[in-house]
Amino acid sequence: MSALSFGCPSRMLLLNCERTRRKELPDMKHLVRRGRIAIAALMLSVSVGTVSADWHQFWHQASIDYHRNNAWPEPFQEMDARQVTAPFEVMKNNGWRLHNTIGHELFRSGDGALLASGHNRVHWIATQSPESRRNIYVLRGKSDEETDARVAAVRQTLDGIQTAGVATNVFVTDREPSTAPGAWATKINRNWMEVLPAPKLPSVSASGSATATQ
Image (cartoon, rainbow, N blue to C red; front, side):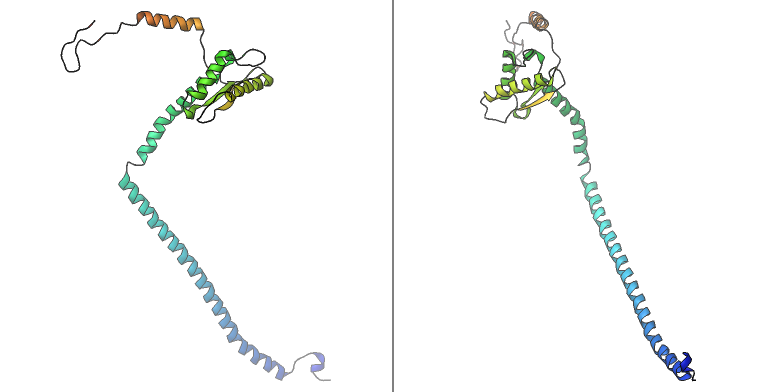
């Protein structure tokens, strides 16, 4: 029985395998070398792209800083001015909101219908107030039904008013404007009229000459 019958290769077969392996080794080395070169080229391209992006970002920021320094103190002055005037805008909005609030005294108790003074207030807001301030704030009632009735009464009054400008909006508010009794306001006006000095012409005119005063 020969050696091949037991699965053992012969000497000639081993020599052929060794020659084939020697021929394949250079090809594998070339493949590995090409793979390494490709990976290195890929990493180099990525790094070059990153450096190029950072370089453009640097010059872009340098240009911004240059123009910002030349324009100083603008636009920082404008930002400061807006911050200074912002509280006044808030106060103006709050003032107009309270002024345009239809309070409890302008509605009839129970059914939420508008009184005559309430109709006059709604008419003034819809026709005389600035177009940017034509918002009516209805003070919330004791119940949701009363609040809905108040809003419906205000809208009904607005439907009967002919306006060519901006439509008047209706909102519900919980902020009640401060009020004073009519007798107190009348007394203040009468006292002011009593101490108001009589009008008269100045003793010296704008040109510097003397004038007769009464």
